[in-house]
Length: 324
Ligand code: PMT
Image (cartoon, rainbow, N blue to C red; front, side, top):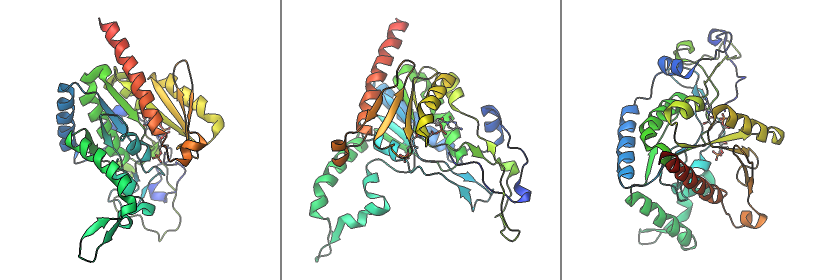
């Protein structure tokens, strides 16, 4: 959710920001160059795990950028590093993912958690993990190697909002035949505004003319076609972020009603790591970490994921009952 009221130079100003539908968006924007390769990987992954009778979860996570120039020097970004998705993928999901921060290695990639601080150079030239960090690293490494060995994780990356949307459409359509067995866990912070390629300047915006005012078009909401056409039988969970606690439940419920999917998980920017609200058709329970859990570094995703797996089980059972 990059914010809209940004800046532009006269020549960038497109007047009134337009609202287009998803089909028009795909017709007027370019797919990422790597899309065919990514689609091939996803097809192989889906076929392999589907044949083995495993359930597949698509996790989207991280922010999307919005370029300001076709030869992009500047872009708008948002706060999300993709922690939600990376963390969730470490709990029992059989998944593939798209995001910035990666599961397992996320523990050693933050600027405050640089991996170099966890290792030391010995006198004989060997490099070793510093002994106090071994237990935690060993446990993460074991899980990581198991997931790698089983090929249970496919990472697909995106940068811009267009990359994300083209990938989302392709991946959900590849997963469509999994019907009720597929889960879609949509935690990405997708920009709501963008500048269409044909309205963008080609080259780097020059600063010589002073300030900058931008008018941006609205990115169409893709949950609608996703729920209705791309993955109509899947178990779809979307996230809703707000900063105003008084808006959270109402806005989340509005999204659930509007798109007609199964769950909206509402979270607030400031408390998203400790508290979420599960909004379903007939309930809105809160899920919270206790003080003790927070002090013991328990992650809220360790509660979110099992709850969703349980609800997905029920979803599959109900679908099978209806089909029989
Ligand atoms: O990365 P972290 O720091 O861990 O933060 C995690 C998070 C706060 C980003 C995550 O938990 C979260 O809340 N993600 C959703 C952010 C959000 O509220 O997005 P939204 O209101 O723009 O969209 C709501 C839903 O609509 C999302 O599922 C989104 O994928 C979808 N959407 C959004 C824009 C758009 N054009 N089309 C869409 O379908």
